[in-house]
Length: 232
Length: 364
Image 1 (cartoon, rainbow over the protein chains, first blue to last red):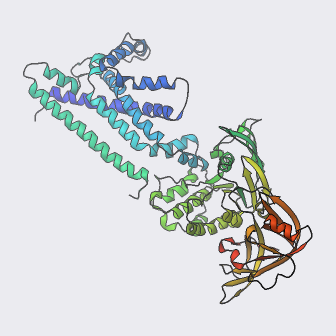
Image 2: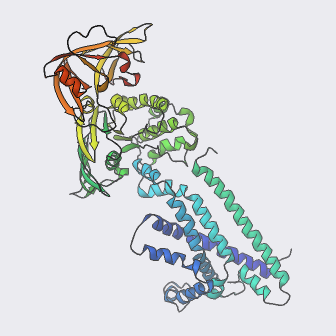
Image 3: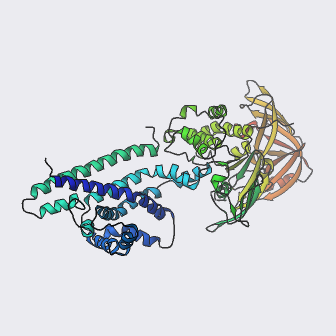
């Protein structure tokens, strides 16, 4: 199977966007999951709703909201542009932002569930052994919720690989910049004789998604053995 | 020593308790739901009480008026939890050494090895907790608490999850910790035989309040209110004299007189703490004749009180106070009054092996 240069570029952009989106949202995902699982504070249900919003809104709407907020003239976008010189709209970084926002609820949900199912007695035990709150989190909480973190990250990665609606609304599909695999497949279907190209890229995305799933299964199993404490 | 004087509310349940621990092992006893575990958590710094103060050896751990609260990680305690709470993602060795990362102490490899050896966990070091038996987990949990070089050990029913055979296996380790390490222990329990065997001092809790505090004999002897699920009993210190070979009996001498015990692990010269349940004793006036009961102590009645439908009689046997329980009918028929000379009769079997406990120090 021969990929055109353009196909390779689209694949590279998709991988880059998905990796950056899932990696960059991970710290926020853990923090928000922890807040939602452990803390009670005013506005908690508002935060919960905001996090889950991309799951229930049409992706086009999410993309449009991102455009309003993070576009060059947007409320946040203009500040980023003028103060930090960061432009997101119509850039691959914007595609990463869109993918991260779309995958965020899936990531938070998986991590939150694993935090909620953690035996808090183990954290108390660690503190009686002299570990500060940060040390408890680092040496007990984090390793024990690792299966949830892996699941959440892979879900977010898979969502980012397949993201289409919000991305194309926010950053369009500029070849070499924001034209991801999904956008390229859509592009092929819109031109006469594009079927072969669409099929090639479809196979590619199936392979990438399966590989990600397989990798996460293997990783999760290894971590599971460790956290459940069976003798390996 | 640990001094606690706190008020705390948990839902509708109020705890208002003040007590101090002594040297050795202080047992916190009481029925379930009496607030024992909450008090242990308050002592450990895992629960912050509403008001009051806690000091340990002159160091303030909590003072609501001065707004001082030392969190658990800064109190230098070792806590052995009911369920062990070993870290599942670490090996036994990593569990044991966990505290070393945060409380750097001078590592004494020989002492470490001795402790591992005494607890019999040397062959488990590279295993993970999930693969351990209940007794093994308990020993590792005790080891982990001791490895953190605590100034105070808190144990919350560390044996309650174990069957009698495993309990018997762990008890000598607890005695070792109490006697050899010199670390004061706050021991939460509602098992009479553990408390009888281990405690130097007993604090009895009911409904979040301290109802009795002091020597085990005085607190558990029923002189004051007892936890509902504990039977009043008497403890007599005795020294093993000799075994009656072929009869399965052991003769011991106590202040109250000679005692015949069912033969146990103790050897001649050992001090034991004999445990006699109040309901196992028969009172007699005058010469009781030829009876099968082997044990017979003489004394005089020092008090007769009525509580919960029974008559409780304390008898002074040459300075050793023994508690007996009789029916109201018997008490009236015998006309028991203060100063009345009586005999106390009980079978050797009524001193069961569970009640035969080694004392931690020889009596002068």
